[in-house]
Length: 231
Length: 231
DNA sequence: CGCGGCTTTGATGTTCATCAAGTAAAGTGG
DNA sequence: CCACTTTACTTGATGAACATCAAAGCCGCG
Image 1 (cartoon, rainbow over the protein chains, first blue to last red):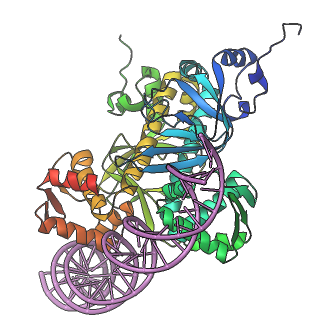
Image 2 (cartoon, rainbow over the protein chains, first blue to last red):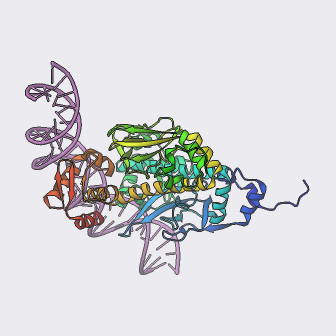
């Protein structure tokens, strides 16, 4: 046990539990030499639609949105997601280029691992492969079911859904700073900006939420739930 | 080379190229003993939402739809897909139970492989694992991008999209028997049944398609493309 | 302090769902 | 095989939901 100390920070990375749990110390060390951490300011693009994929990226801290741009220039937001849930794009193995863009909604730290290294690891370590497939499947399932959930609701149901999503999934708090513009919410739920704003104003008028600039306070969580379910 | 003849039909299965390409003869033989083929009549359920997942299923022939039922009882069609594209549900590894239902739109043959066998194979054969992950990713990507494509269109654009989907992706022919009801199209594109019918009648009136009972003939493919893009 | 982007609200019009009533087609049972 | 029942399809009329347009207020930033 008197071997030279391993200075690799990956050993203690919280992300190990997510997909790198079945790796021995040597592999973790290799991983460490094949990765790079990068900081992104709020608003910066993490990767562009069409860009070549050559790293496996995951979010260590912050908040990101996954989106694409339609031929007419409008933005379609696919999902908004927190650390550990965002494992690169879904298509690292199936596509050579990113199908969607990812941008930082808050200051974020992304860890980028050489893709060939990941692929090699995937080939020779079944446990790792299984963990990664499971994680990727879960992310995809979540996106699909979220999309279906939204699709079945009307305008106010969708807005309520988004408020609840931030409250319960993203911030786990009834008070939070909205990390997106009204327009981004609109692009997320497929409604017009004006109507998103109108609905939020209605919620405010009815005492369901309070708005202080960018800060939102959910006052009546139950009523939001009812609206989201019924809408 | 005088070993006993292997009667395994899997050796020549077309599906080998899809995910079972990296397997040696012995493994293929094992696979053969762990699989079962099943025939489903048009309309039959292949698997139910909520049912326990214990086989890896793929479509050998026929046509299926993937869907779920909302709390209010309406059906949401997630995708309609042909052989080799449908590899069980997406969630065989991430979930214990099916999240969605699958039913046969045409008479179909499904091959069902013991899930534990697949998992074991996945763990010890990197090439197989890679092929499977790639396939699953592609299916997921397709579902997500299709959903986004539909979402950005209006009523007539969506109906045109569906007609083109059957013409170009499913049947590769301008004349085909519509395998779904008007209501199922409506559930697929998220519009009302009456309006789907109305739009198809409009297309017929304008000479874009012809309708003989269940049979559809696409007369003006280009006009459909224009409507689909613009709508 | 002035400019540009985001937000807000009202007024107007379009798109689409819903309802209703009728027809065609496809099962079902005698 | 025919009468009956049910399910799918069709069309028109109406109203609700939502987009769009426009004008004004707000806020942050150079």
